[in-house]
Image 1 (spheres, rainbow, N blue to C red):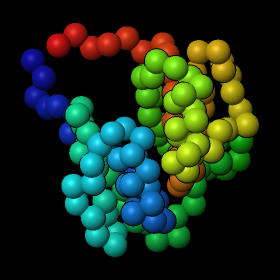
Image 2: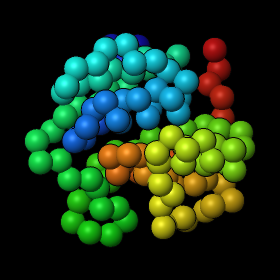
Image 3: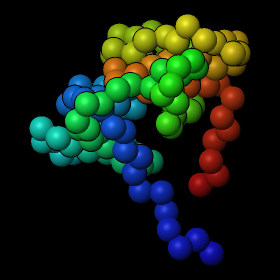
Length: 125
């Protein structure tokens, strides 16, 4: 029996407002709380948070000294449509694309990698 449930995923960043509003728009969530140092985004499945960190440096994945730290895999139906929306909201397509026919690696406005994937099955209710 589980003693906990996934409550939130938090991302370090330099600008919580930019990152929080990006994730809210991309996931169809809403900014439920915002301050200069923290933004909380409510989605239908979990909370996301953007937290200001002094001297924040984005991951340098796949090369470099700063690993990706964490990334999200987002279930989507159409790669082209999802990529276009992510780009419109401020994401950048990663130069590294291991399997672009199945998933696209994107970078959020703070540089965190995330994947848009057609390969993630639905959860049973």
